[in-house]
Length: 154
Image (cartoon, rainbow, N blue to C red; front, side, top):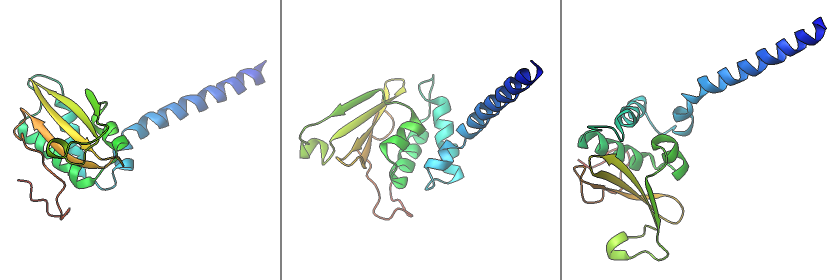
């Protein structure tokens, strides 16, 4: 009977340690998936997420900073979803309309709050083509800079 209780206790401790390790590693997910992001970038995104969909919400400058970070890092859809959460709205176009959508085939809309939204546009391969704001201080799309290390998007 004592051996059985000892085995159950050891298994229980192992399970608890496993879940604690998973929980502690959860905070490092951003670092694992975004090797292209600096600590400042991660802090900017975390600050944005803390204010996202709250009142008054992130400032226009914070939203623009996050958009620039996402464009510069060229993250995948999965990475963006891990960083920003599920989009408020997803729209897929069968055939892009050049004057309206460029080469974008899919839009992810994130409601920022206070009738503001950012729209992340992806091509068929899941690469970001542009990010556009609605009511967030930039209404025209910003595009990935040609020189990733020196983005001219200010």
